[in-house]
Length: 299
Ligand SMILES: Nc1ncnc2c1ncn2[C@@H]1O[C@H](COP(=O)(O)OP(=O)(O)OP(=O)(O)O)[C@@H](O)[C@H]1O
Image (tube, rainbow, N blue to C red; front, side, top):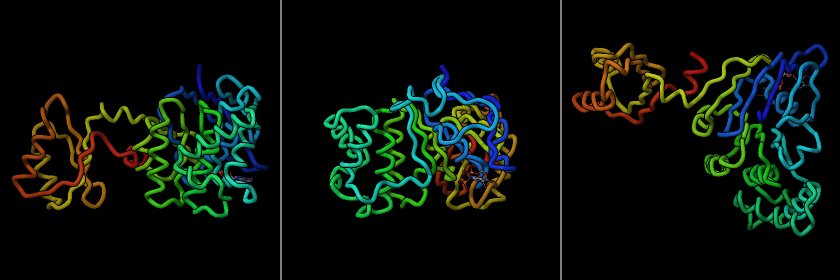
C-alpha cells in the first residue's frame, strides 16, 4: 500500500494558490526529501499531510486514510517548522501527557517519554523546563516528541534549521539510525544534508511538483564530481578531456568539476584520473560517483 498518495492536490489561501494540482505516490522506505525555494508550498503540503489544513481541491491519503483520521493516531507524526513545547511544564511531565493523549497508560507514557528523550540525547534534562534548554536541545526535544508511539511516518519541516553543526549532525544521525523502521519526509534548504540522508528528492516550485530525483540513480549515472584542493583548472579540463571515453569536463564552481564519461569506453576511470593527478601534482579533496543534488536540480 502507498504511504502517501496525493491526487491533483491543491490548496489556496484566498486568491493565493499555494499548492497546484500535486499528484504523487510514495512508498515506505528510505528518507524522502522535499525541497524548493521560499514560498514554494512545502509547509502547506506538510500541513495537508498532517490534516492541519484541508485541501481546496483534490485528494490526499496517508496509508489509505484521510490525514488527521483517528486511525492514524500514533502512526503519523510531524515536527512543524515553528514547533515549540509548553514552557511551563518540565519535559517528562509534558511527554507523559503526550503519551497518554495517544492512548498509553500514565506509566507506559512516562517510559515512552524517557525512551524518546534518551534517543535524542536528553536523558539528563528530563526534569528541566523547555525554557532552560538551548535552541539545539529544544529542537531535539521537539523531534523526540514526534517519535512518541513509534510512528511509521514522520514529517520533519526544517529539522536542522538554525542548529550548530554538532546538533545538526546529531539530528541527521538520529534520522539515519531510525530510518529502517520509520519513513521520514524531510523539508530542508540544506541540499548537502539531504543528499547524505535521502534516496528520493521531490522538488516543489510555485506550488507545482517539478522533478523527482532518485539518489540511487546516481550510481548508474556516467558522471563523477571531483573537488580539487589545488590544480590548474584549464590544464585539468584539457588533460581529462583527452582521455578516451570522456564526453565532457565542466567547472561547476570553485575547484569542483563534473566529468561526463561513457562507462563502456573507459575502464577504471578513477585509476586513470588519480594517475593523471599524481603526474601533475594536483591534489584532490573528494570524488563523488554521480552528480551532486544541486547539479541535478538546477542545471
Ligand atoms: N496562512 C496563509 N495565508 C495566506 N497565504 C499563505 C498562508 N500560508 C502560506 N501562504 C502563502 O502560500 C505560499 C506557500 O507558502 P509555504 O509556507 O507553504 O511555502 P514554503 O515552501 O514552506 O516556504 P519556506 O521555505 O519559506 O518555509 C507562499 O506564497 C505563502 O506566502
